Image (tube, rainbow, N blue to C red):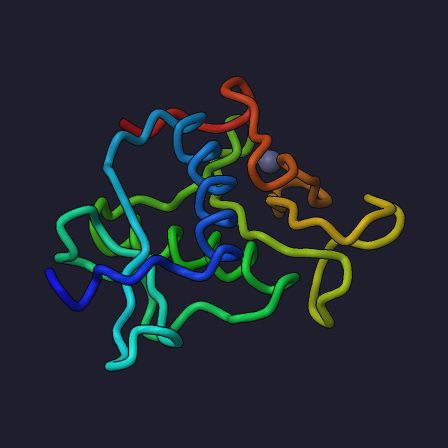
Length: 147
Ligand SMILES: [Zn+2]
């Protein structure tokens, strides 16, 4: 596992620790970590199972401070879809899968009417659409328990 020895950029590891709080709130126990795919081990970061056997999403994580959290959230979502065959996270009220967005994104359903900051939020499209919770702050009672 020599190729995975280098530590991930701080923003990705910080982002993963935030997203892992939501994984825990959903009762998913599958351990995941960051892995690097490129030869100089600096650029192509992915989210993978602890043993490195599955990687979430085809594209590397987006390397920007505001994009890192959204990118990691989406990659963990892809990984669970691939490995567990589960849509994660799911709204406990509407039984629907949610996606992470921030207000600053062009196609975001989250507007200034919902939030007044540019943090990342999980959004459920049930009924007229609502925010399930801030990424990293999902409540055990608002998210469907998956394992
Ligand atoms: Zn909902």
